[in-house]
Length: 80
Image (tube, rainbow, N blue to C red):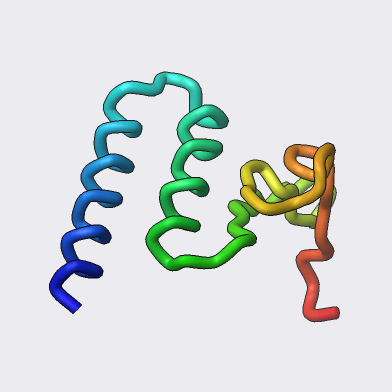
């Protein structure tokens, strides 16, 4: 349990360091999803951005998804 906590703390420190280094939001998000996937030990992680003009969600960053999906795939923002 203690080892897992230490690993999570290291990952949080890495994400904090990334936030301080990167001026480019997309580059930060790309690197952050990799760190988050490591922390929670899952294969697919995504960050969605709500687009009010089209009322949908754009997959702006992700890890584990097929090539070409990130920054192009959209999801409905309604309850369907």
